[in-house]
Figure (cartoon, rainbow over the protein chains, first blue to last red):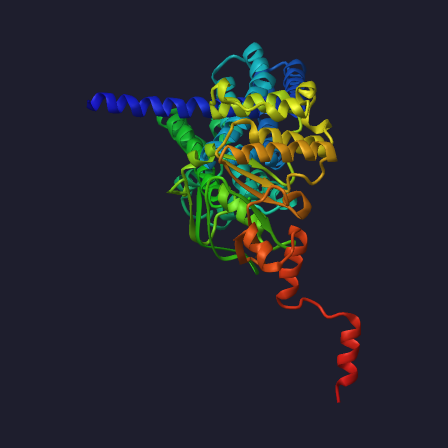
Length: 274
Length: 253
């Protein structure tokens, strides 16, 4: 009797998941028709291919590609997600008058958007990397790019749900991107400079976890030869990130960065008037 | 069947709904009437769970609505302004909602689809449709799943006279099937033949709710429009005529 009950619950969850995927499919379909994602894919493809063609040394090409990925992927993820959210307001409204829960609707939206951005990234950057630089560094780059896509899509959903109108939403998304991509580094430099007399290595390790972009950068840099130039801190980092623990740590923190904002977004979406 | 108990909703400074109590039962066609901004749409949106009320509770078929969305499978909703995904084709829209609602083919009500001749535009994307055609799509979608409760927000606004007549006929048919139908409209002549009950809202408060016979008897008017106007005039005066203002100034010492 008990086993049947469990089966029933499993079955119900299965149905829920299927209908979620179903909804995501329609979101995905709508996105693919808008052609922005296709342009994004082509842009990434052209940039990565030309970098690999221009640079003789593939490691150098990866380094240039890294900088582009760290700037462009979060930016596009955030802007695209916020604009998509406001554009699909009608769709969300339509879904809300159907017997579907709000959590399911928002998660399906997230699934659709992140899936389309991920596939753009894997085609645009993944394919060239697999062709030209199929090694540990290349894999680290792909992992970081994919994680950043998920993280910034999630943050953008939070910004879009919280903001009252389109202008505010996109503005908030841009500001957040500025913060994570540029301002945060400046702040860290300031802190390090001010406390340069103290041993700060462990502390900077903690600070890096507070910014997914930095975390991704360190994670990849340490897989490269350039880490030798980074002195004592670099050696400590290499010790940490080079081990299995480091991969685990990075993946865990990235997961947190992807799930916590999304969870907050769902929570605020549930109580929202539409 | 819908029961509303002391429902209240506030948007920042605006009290959109205040202490609304009502009972709607099957077979009724209830007209929600009131000036612009009187809270009709907010009330409808609360019923659908699109707006979360601050206080009070709503029961649909005896079950309070809070969180569980399954009650909405008994409701067909036609919004005031039907907005749909731009890139989606009309046919896909119907297919998608059918997919999500999981209603068997035999239970579908394609009456309006046929009468509005929507099948011929199944391949058109939603963004190319005119406002009136969109309205037809909304109407067909609301009736498509044969729900027990129909909520129609300004159903005839924007429809041409012929389509408006088709829709009204459809509403009459559904009324005979003992369904509960809620309509808001400013075109009172459209409601005349349909409605069985009138609920009058003003500034978020329910002024009265009564069946149409009582209303006609009390106001001694046959037409709904005139009856409502009489009730409104009987209430507090909203604005003074300019000659009244001048007169009151002249009389001032």
